[in-house]
Image (cartoon, rainbow, N blue to C red; front, top):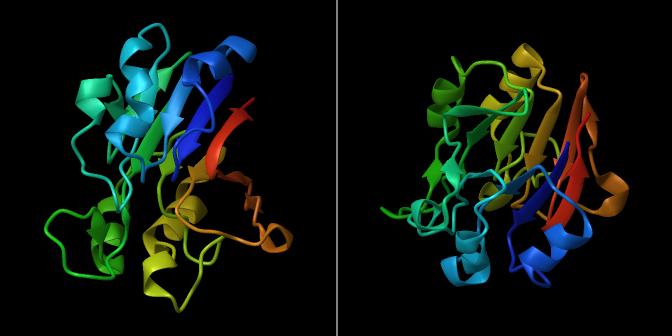
Length: 187
């Protein structure tokens, strides 16, 4: 299954052009995108669109673009179960930002079912994050989720890991970091 994954910045070219060059089975958004950056998704109705909001998102564009919100939800596409968790670790007070304390995230993820592909904005704690910098620290609850449920894949954006330090595997889960756009092939 081919996924076109978008995260953290406007696509570098037309989404329709990208899916014309490489057929995709689903489009996945990982957050910190603005409506005008991905408005083209509104006219793409022949491909399932799934996603989560990031900590800088308005939290209002998914319905308008036909994106299925995966935050604390699951959906199956071609026999593959996707689930998701939005936002980042709370680092400031804002009634609009999608942010959670470590304790809130852990509690919400404690009973989340096993999925094949976990879609998140923020990475798990200690994986492609920046511990000690609260705004870019990973969720401990996501790490616990990986240890407990062992999804096949976890897709995330949000941070800027060095290529030499990129974590791509954890206890049988393939960790996929995306900044911009990337076609991710899942087996």
